[in-house]
Image (cartoon, rainbow, N blue to C red; front, side):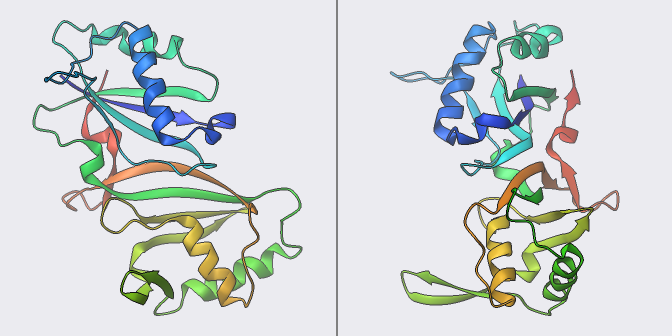
Length: 235
């Protein structure tokens, strides 16, 4: 049986790297007594995969982990057992049973929501002017950046990869392309915006929280994206 787990990564856990988070969940699943399926071969390991690695220093309210459990697993108590062994900062938000034909989360991630706020001491004096400039930046027909590749400098247009950008009180909401092919980091957007203003983004100026991860919906219901947890049945 395929299970999708949604969890938070808040507080001091933002300083834990992706590989350590993976090891942590392997141990947590063992402590919770979950009957996870093991791979074959000479070195069997738990069958599990994360939707999208989170950058070091970022928090999240919408991380996803896919696991496969044995038919003997008691799904009715899975969430409670896992919640009891979570460390501070990690919270299990939902557990969903996926169809047998479901692809793993990593292969279907298409977009991500982020919320950006300023750390103390970095907040612009005139927030209204800051967001007015941000609107002008986003209204450009193209948002070009230059990056170094093995073949030399290469231009990239960020505009098609930014699906939403808006002010929400004193924070910035961003929805951007995510996944293995067209992955856009919120830091890249903000660095481009500061260059647009003739400035440089100060290091560590922003608190960044990933709010949700999405798969493409196929637009059958009019929505472009679906949260990953909606692709299964909550248990």
